[in-house]
Length: 221
Image (cartoon, rainbow, N blue to C red; front, side):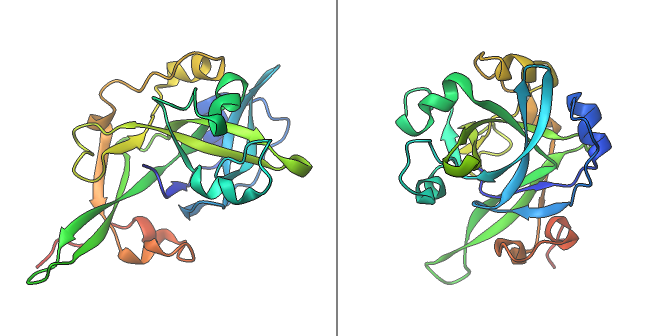
């Protein structure tokens, strides 16, 4: 599962890491809390090379009658996306990658003396600060609206206590083959490169979008 992520890089960092061919530099606004139905930056392959595009998160297939289907299509299981009607066309010919500085996941913890549980958010990013590259699919809908989804796979050991699924994270050398039509290959030992820190529950609101979203909470007690 991937329900929130961050994009905090400069244009130069993005341009250099993905060897983009866009003709002009963009002034990118950082986002500490990208939520479904919001716009985010993705990288797609065009005839001359890799380019940056802004798209709505939540894939809306070209045959959809309205955009609401995208609210349930923010993630696509890598094991079944090629056969699912909502993702099948994009799997064949509309691949993308989603650069992320990090993403969020929630852990359910029991409340002391109660039968209910509480969800505590955690921020997950690479220890070395490099971008995470999520495998994705994209579509073009009415009036040229572009949308995307993030592929997920079974969670690695270091993330499995947070959620059973995680984004498909590509190694740099796997980006080109994925965009060219190959099956996605998750970065080997990806979990070992990640740091996981508890963060403020305030980031659960999409309206809370500031550096405090990713600041680690002090140790309890």
